[in-house]
Image 1: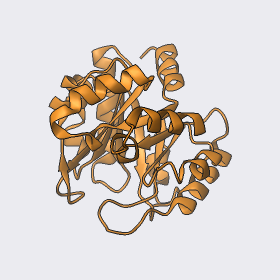
Image 2: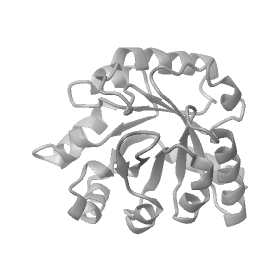
Image 3: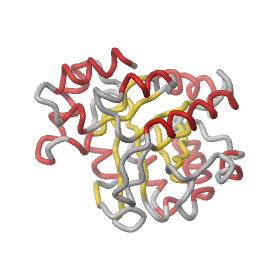
Length: 230
């Protein structure tokens, strides 16, 4: 794989990753196009299987169909990511995150890298950490050197509220451990105009937000306010 190309992809993976499934289901394509016009360079796809998490959303067909000109950031909240990872590479995903808590996570990471190499293009591999998962819990997977670590402030498998401060503490500890040359660090969950300043203070490279932007009265203004805080 071309290392320069992967580093370029990492450099572009900075800012607000817009959670597209927070848009009206019938207007997702328009939402993606609008976001690009606002200056959004990263579209976030939450893929849920109804097993790993209770909700069900999307699939690789959505990722392939919804192009906005920016990066396609795919978050696989599924029980067996190794079974489906290759289809998201084929669909054009630029970032694919698997969960440390899912079975076959290590296999999925290998498949993403092998499939991307065969396709001749860079794909960033992310590792997601639920609120109760510590870096020590995920140490074997972290030794696989993911390109991105996604810190979640809430667990979609429960109805517990987001733990913003705890997630910020985890992200700060990861930053101190890895330093400036480490993986991209991303924050997901509970990101609103009210919480963005606290989250931005822990200096994540990427912040995922969906409903706080696309559910706002003025989505463009909400996005730009988020981006400014970031």
